[in-house]
Length: 473
Image 1 (tube, one colour):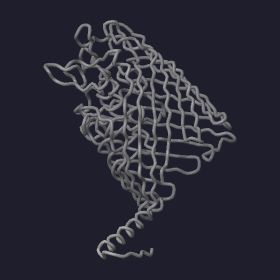
Image 2 (cartoon, helix red, strand yellow; image 1 turned 120 degrees about the vertical axis):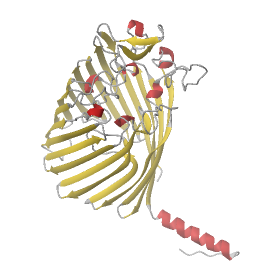
Image 3 (spheres, one colour; image 1 turned 30 degrees about the vertical axis):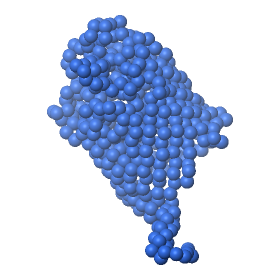
Image 4 (cartoon, helix red, strand yellow; image 1 turned 120 degrees about the horizontal axis):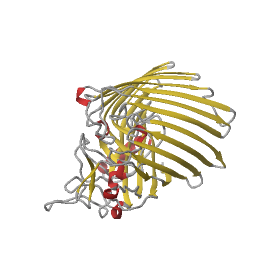
């Protein structure tokens, strides 16, 4: 670089220094990217919330999301990234359907001159978009609609070993997904890989769920994962161990066989997977679960057994899965990352949001088929669920289309979904060992009772997402 100048020599020196620094910064491999998206859930059961008549509607909402990320390759395997998100909730049907939050509870009607933090005329879908309960996950606060989801530094040495720390998106863990605040590292030798993760907190950072970082996902505790993986040719054998300190320890394994790992939509391929997860709970963790329905005890241990068979022929695919819980295996983990690859959060906001797929002693069967046609992907998936708390039946149509010219992605799901919650249980959360449920009945000004008979609830819905991606550098 050659610079010619006249005048004040001190100013000239600063100018030269700034140019040299900027030239050095621009030498980094830097990119700026982001996305804008809109997500809508429309529930067809739009009745008024009324526990006295056992009416727990489905609810509808629309959210908006804006995301920006700056990524930098600093020096020979050293990488840094920082990114932020903004979310908004422009529509919330529960504002006129009613709510199930008791007076004085976080987010509920104010009492004795106190304040609440309803942002949408009494709606409660802030429990999906903006929910924040502090770092501990137990101190519900004013909803937050912005977060730094990416802020990490990573180093990778030729794929032999690497380390990453900060806030970043998780990759390829069976039972823990989305974004973690913590550190992880790996070492690899030929076909063998050892990986260890420590997570101080987790966030859901997407257009349908927006929860800033906290420990609600792990019962207020940090999480550690250690896993060993052997992967060669057609086989993957992946034993692992999850630990929520003082609450749960869980060995598990994933065994996968793939007849055609390099499948490119031509010919035939079969992929078979078995996943076993075997959590056991110390005495301090044997109470009721706190992140499912609060209606089942944890016991001393539980098991999840998952079998999946997938077939591919050219652009067609079909297959099925069986997912079985023995005991309350998912009461401490397994609902914020699950090898099913299925959205298990499509129940009603009035019924703890989550499907009964992961409930105590649940048995689930899945069948699907689908294909691609001129840029359109489609799939039909059917599900049957039985459990002590509730039975469910579902058939869903998934459609996806990517308009590459404008970098627009469209996703639609239309689902028939029926839920039968059984006598003696609560719709929504339950109180530990109580005859009352957590749902607040505004007609009687009291907590709703447990169901005196089976209640059939329609949970059919439409989901639609449109996403625009962009890259500035």
